[in-house]
Amino acid sequence: MIGSLLYLTASRPDIMFSVFLCARFQVDPKESHLTAVKRIFRYLLGTQSLGIWYPRHNTSFEIIGFADSDFAGCKVDRKSISGTCQFIGQSLVS
Image (cartoon, rainbow, N blue to C red; front, side):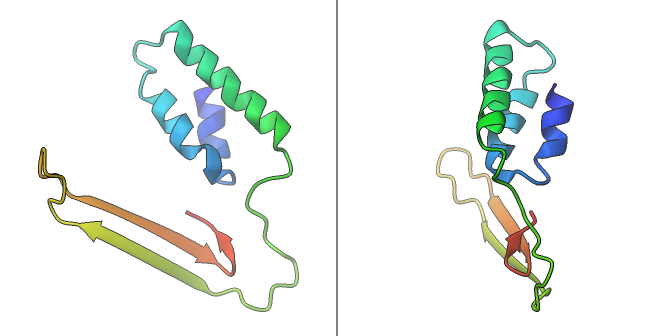
């Protein structure tokens, strides 16, 4: 089930955090993790019209990327944090 959800995160970035969090526990899953995965599937069933859509007649099909990073910004463990997002036209890709 997690593999199917991981595949869907390519077109449904709204479930990415929840799916990756559930995937962490695949070594020793509990009943609560199965409940969470079923809840994600119910959410997908209720929101089938959401996702990344690419318009057919998009005049602007340029690739735009944004990045942000913080060097050792966490005061507790001094870990660095970074993030990126890429758009094709007006659609978020990753």
